[in-house]
Length: 199
Image (cartoon, rainbow, N blue to C red; front, side):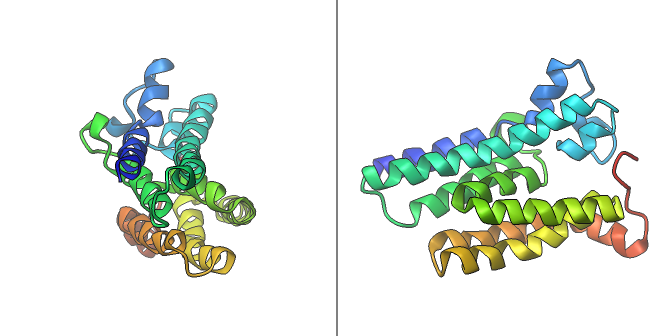
């Protein structure tokens, strides 16, 4: 139980590191909470025109989801932890990104971190979802539309790939939270006022 607790708490703390904020400070850019959509994520950082910072934000936020879940998959069996621990770690690192203790609980929307989690759980599904995101993003130039499309496919893909495991059930919660965090974008999409990539 101690090992499970440490894995879950550690995952939340890893998720709480906002790479949009860290990278922006390193490059001398404004706090991503204070411009554009106010979202500390790669798409908003891209609005500064600094592509390297946006790319590093994307990779960092994805890597923390991957590292937390991959580590849990290796450590949990050795520690004799219950089957649900990897799913709990996936949720913890995701919630850490959404509500980071290090950044006054003002986190991002979670798309990159969710992608990292999926890659750690089943990398072929991760590749497929990235491909869908790219097709939608380049086709429609709207990041939120691409994210919402892949969000619908995320839990379906996990259940297809993993079967009825706790990790697949966690995918439903992650997808629901992604939709919740994109509720403003959904309203903007319906109204035809959603920002395009780079706008």
